[in-house]
Image (cartoon, rainbow, N blue to C red; front, side, top):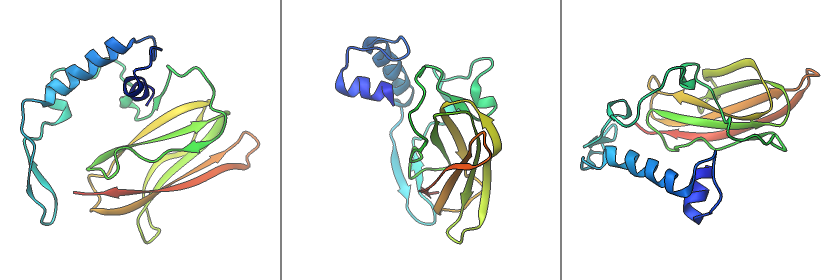
Length: 178
């Protein structure tokens, strides 16, 4: 997010110690991984099918490093040394998605977090976090909906403070398109 703002506004400041030129080079290399294929939609029937799609795992430039945070499924934004001022739940990105998306949230204080996904009938379809404790900061949780059907889903975060009282609750909508 900060890098996007930096590149969009051509801000001279750095993000995590990276300069504008360094961020541009990284994005150029990532884009180059996917530039050799022509993307085309071949079907809109029961699910969207596309040709020329390259899986992220097949990209030679993108590869996990030892101890990569995705092994535990939650990413802490260590570059952001500032404590968030308020609790917040952001809209998932990308949205609509197929089949994975990321849900970001902010904690201004040490908290216990529950994050669940529900279908349109209000039935729980996934528990991403279940009473897990976190320090203050910004976090991102990946959600893999490959076992779910296309449709609209809701995700809800419940944050309990150290006093055991519900401090924050928010619900957002997301769309899965297969």
